[in-house]
Image (cartoon, rainbow, N blue to C red; front, side, top):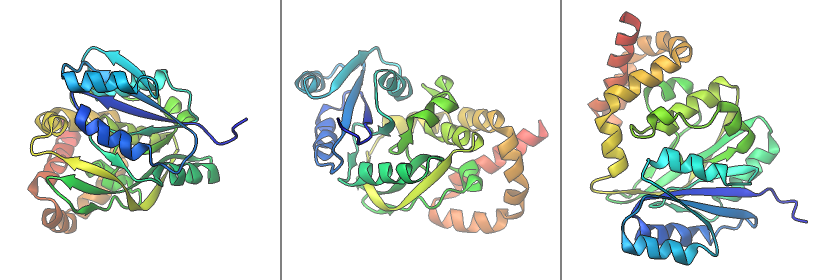
Length: 268
């Protein structure tokens, strides 16, 4: 009998067969011995993708759904999974060989940890390392600091009620769910090393959709988690000058949009 906790790797896929090959190739190199793979095809029409999914059907569980977005795809994958831990991997990314084992080790040491996340290496249109940093709720109010490519405790996912399906077509559902983990008292464990490769496309479908809908997403998430935002607001307001200087240097003016929207929340 295998006493090693089962990890369910959940991969949403939409017309990304060639990149999915790379994702699966990286997954096969994991040094963690006990995992299952669940791929949810989100209405792909690409012939190569559909043929490749058929090839994988003997090794992975492949689920087909009408196009509904990665949020719904992940949720449907979780419903078919059996793992004590969940690992979310996007079809165009690649995972380093120790990520899952290090994530599970952190979970096993502390039952109050709900999410384990890491730094990552950009690949494709960019190639530098992104440092996620230790969890900071004030930082989370401003910007999503944790990528969806994380190890998540299944009981914690169930406790927070899963992804908010309202955001399925809008995007940034991962940003929203981290607020809920925090509010439910689950801890975040940071692994300070790049443990996956995040692919940057010249034109990213997911990012384009999310950017287009920011004026809807940010007020929605902040209103939903208004008590958390309110606790952070005073500190953020008085730090604004320092934050504006550093964030503009690192990211650009767009990052200040949440501040303007946050002010509107407390006025209206």
